[in-house]
Length: 122
Length: 137
Image 1 (cartoon, each protein chain N blue to C red):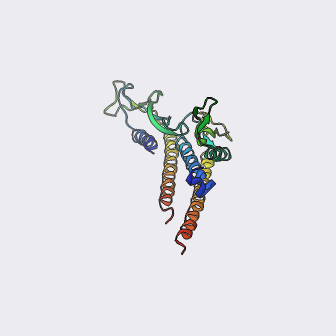
Image 2 (image 1 turned 90 degrees about the vertical axis):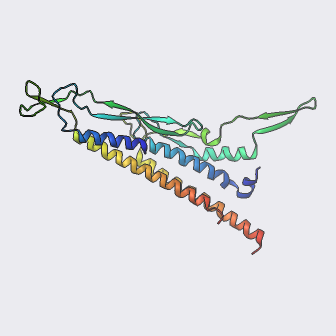
Image 3 (image 1 turned 180 degrees about the vertical axis):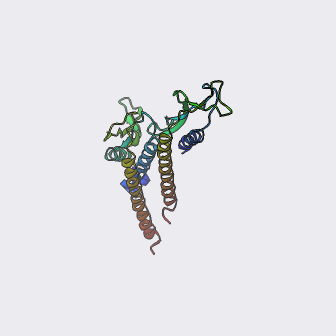
């Protein structure tokens, strides 16, 4: 769940910054992507958790727009917008939300089963 | 044969294994989006056979040697749930090497939780039967 939350947050950050333009291509916002890795349980090698340890930045070059009226435009009148594909981000967000729901369901089931085990013999 | 086995029969071993299987399925579901993760499951029939055999033959064995001494051997076998872990064969391979089919895992998890409840019910009924026998009411 924590890992999916990190992923949801990166997607939110990407979507929020779709229109953050700058006058310098080097400082333009770059899309962030969460990379998951499995963490094997030390006491039981059959089980594996998940860790969102790595967040990579997109290597796509920023988009160049000609907007001489923009206050942050550079000397040639260009502004640089991050190269974010909103459709891909939305897909990422839905997938992440579904995975989060699945995790909640698993936790609920585990809780329910533990409760009925505790009530054994009553 | 230990007390739980003589009281609850096969269900004592089954309940533990079902819990282990739920844990494995939960791991699969948690790693639905992890690149390169291989989904696993417990071969339940195999694990149950191993568990019942282990219950009948405890892993500490005492043997008398020819010169009158007793030798104690402790077998270091893996627990049945770990020994019966198998990788799932994916229905459709995915590009990132992940073999978790979330629909399949969801169905398996729902089924496994029902089976856990069934095992629990068997143990519960047995305990209640014994209680009736003890109190005689």
